[in-house]
Length: 380
Image (tube, rainbow, N blue to C red; front, side):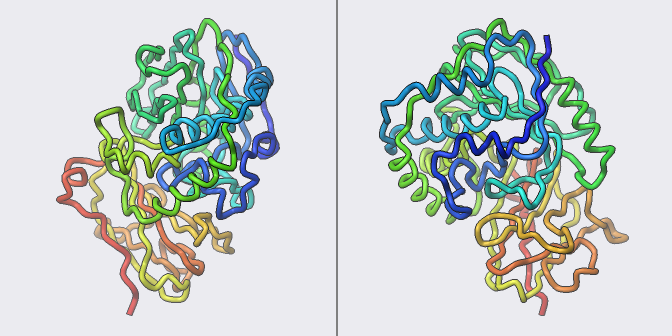
């Protein structure tokens, strides 16, 4: 039996707001590497053989009233639970919550949103195994990332097929599953194709179980979270920050754990580069020219303001990727950061701007460092 729900996730999100954060402190649970927001845009949820409602899962979570202090030792688990709760509230427990459209600029609820993908998010109780079947997406980049409660990546795949996830496999009771699909948000037909892939993604589980997590102390969580965010802003990339036990750099893993469950293995699956130009006052224009970027998935460049949000502008100029870019006769792409808005591949640059480069499924030259994505240069 399939269950379909349509809600307004911004309302659902308000039911669980542990920090009552300002826009700057709302970095919590997203991280620079996560670059995904939970609970925005229209949604539909799908599950086979559901045995428990999301409302029941929420109630069981809130029934636990003994606050558990958050320390360096349990922060990754606490942050994971807190970010999962948002997905549970949006209908993503025992089934997928599908983001069917790119988040409107006016409704950003988390930092560093990725306007290149549509995501499907689900939290599952592995008291019973769950089998997720991914349809064939052809040449389109579509990945499934499986992360346990300690934020270790237990499975990351891009091939279609049926994948059975068990408790023995992930080593925790609960698991978060995040599916990303590349989309040309300027093309309604392309968006529709991704929505069809979402509809064809199947979940089979004998029983959905229940969602029971500790009542994490919000004050100690916020203090540690804010400190990690400050340190995380100094990282240029997140290579070796995500993966399984023994595959990650322990220091980077801890710092990047602010990403909750949204991190992907780097650099094998994706590489995220955070760059801040020296003269980012919004007045000095910059350019960046790329030719053949060695990726099998996609590449993109996005500009954010000082709070890591997209700055609303009259040009709707936020992101350039390999599908939307206008190319020169030689196939190269020149991105214009600021300056004349009539230039091709123009991106609006507010005060204190910076940009993020995403390289999905990088090839060997990127992984071994022989290829370096060019940096933006000031226009003299």
